[in-house]
Image (cartoon, rainbow, N blue to C red; front, side, top):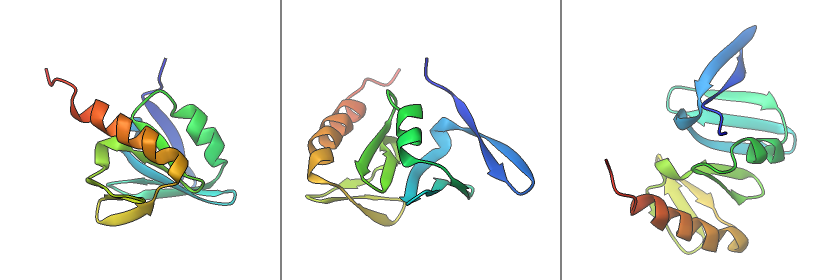
Length: 111
């Protein structure tokens, strides 16, 4: 069963963040930045751990440094995507999976 929220460090405590609000996760070695529309959270974690945690949902690892939410993708190019005014590189390996996932999400009937 897919988690609906995660706890992320904020100041001396933690914030409860709904999964659907996460736009992307950026990794710089062991430091990950989880970005939502409201704020970003920086923590020591593995991007591989986030990849496992968010598998089976709208999230896709597009590069060794990035996991993105397909819900926020606005443009798919040959080797990049754009979302929220920012361009992200996409590895060749992830491009085919991302295009298929994008088409699947965008063609779902809305109830």
